[in-house]
Each structure stands twice: as C-alpha cells, then as structure tokens.
Image 1: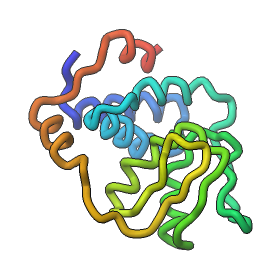
Image 2: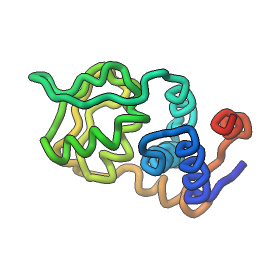
Image 3: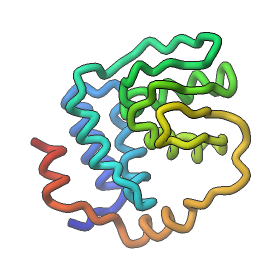
Length: 154
C-alpha cells in the first residue's frame, strides 16, 4: 500500500494511542520518518510493541543514561527532553536506538551510532543528509506492505 506520509502518521498515532503508548504522535512521526528515509521503522516498532517494559524513569549517572534495554520507541522523546535540558548524554544498554535519529535530526543535534548498544546524543549537527529523501516521500508517499500494516493493527 502507498500512503501519504501525514495520513500514515495519523493512522499510526491512533493505533499507538489505542494501545496506550505514552507519546503516540511523536513515535508515529518518527516511525514514518524512518520509513521515508529508507530505514525499517515499522519492523522496529512492531518488535518494540512486543516488549513488556515500555517506560523508564531516566536518571543520569557518571556515565550518562542507562536505558536498561527499554526500547527507544518508547523513550526517544523523553531522552531528547533530557538532552535539551541537561546537555549531551552518553546512552548505554540501548534498544532500537534508530528511533533517536529523527529526533536528533529535527533538533539539529549530533548523534553517535544509533545501532550500537551505547552512543551519545547531543552536540551540533553539521548537515542533514535526509532532506532529499523526506522531500521525495512527502511528494510520492511511502510504501508499506500489507503484512507490516496488518501486524501494526492486529
């Protein structure tokens, strides 16, 4: 199926809200952003939705933030709020760190490797390599297989 980005985001946000996600709009946006940029946002989100632990009280320690393997599909907005308030943070025990990417790009922040189980968020971003991909997806929409869409709505 081909979806307009905004329509897909709205439908996904409703689904996430219906299952009790704490920040459905932000994560729906990030999932669609990842898909538009060629990443597997839907697959990661489906995997995260099967996790039992969906929240964490973020506490900085001498090393930064220990995420205790709670998915960034739940924590990314809170991590970004913490970084904006307290500055750059080294993240460890990260699950689905790719969900940090859309937020870091949006805030023009640097981001260490989001597929590594530990990386830093914060600092200045020097360029946005995603603008062309996002513009193309906004123009033509995004392709979502029926199987993935069905998994998100089952």
